[in-house]
Length: 440
Ligand code: UDX
Image 1 (tube, helix red, strand yellow):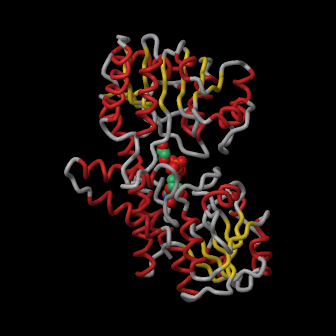
Image 2: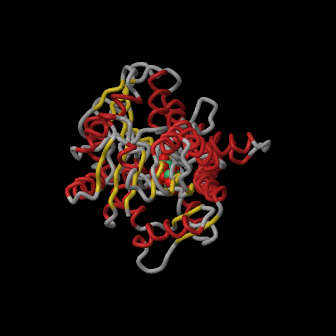
Image 3: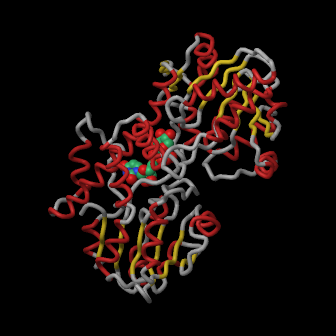
């Protein structure tokens, strides 16, 4: 099938290469010329395991192309995916202007029957806006061309994007015509080896499903973080409580790891957007507001623990920090707890020595660009030099079983603040460490 993808971010690139890998002919469109030039050379704007190899392979096989020219790309398309960003606007609601700009461009350039798929996470009712925008542009041209707008939310996780896309738990399709359902099933069928995992529904329910899924997962995390904060006060251990409750199949083990809060491009943005969507429809979503509030506080939990141990004035103290990315396996620092932790400590006079296997460039160039007293080193043990304590914020594999003798030797005080509960408290205390974690 001829597929066009508009927007070369995580979702667009992953969908593009995976559809190409299944033998479709895919053209990825983006208005950032520099990005397209780089992608055409096989250079990716993001780090995602396995993605680069698949881009290079499918480009060589001529299944995958990159261009800034939507009009040329759309000429042969059967299905067009909109995968542009829907960032959090100033008011906390999702900003859909990129999506509507693409819709307008589609209406201005389309030449034949087309399925237009909203894959970006968009507020409920956006498909209707996309429909109206395309129609208005067609009317302007005096053209009457059939098109179908579909909602097909994406559930991939960064760091596991290719695997999630290739072996999805489910493919949600919201549409209002048999033609659209049938074409979408045709496209996705090769991704199901044993049985199909299509879930079909109306468009608004599909749009809502994405927000409900992400908010449910964020709720589990904030709930567990709240339990952890109570555990700390009552002398219980959240790690044990997690196992105690996770064994109940109705609760399950996943997404109940207490920690330094959730970050990333999806949870913070989508929880906020759903709260705003509810508000716009006259409903105050109390639980969703609380999920957000708990997380905003949780992102400062490690900084609070450092301050409780070393005092409000951290002048003259250096802290070694492991992990900047919002989670392992990515260089993405959007809403990463490390940003909030570092800012809180630097504000109080501390110096930070940081190391992350992938995200240091992002930190230096964007997220912590204007912050003084943050130094980046090239290996994990270097952060320890003259540091008063070690702070762990992202659970990269290389931090999981470090040489604790080396850590103890290098640190001024043998103190570890662990925002991801990676180590065995008993063993560390035996070795003479002061070990602080979340929920104990
Ligand atoms: C998430 C959803 O998982 C995915 O389905 C959706 O499409 C996009 O949003 P992603 O943002 O890539 O994916 O990351 P995910 O692995 O879900 O982690 C999100 C955040 O939650 C991370 O900061 C992680 O550290 C945190 N987390 C996760 C916890 O604090 N505790 C947990 O138990 C699980």
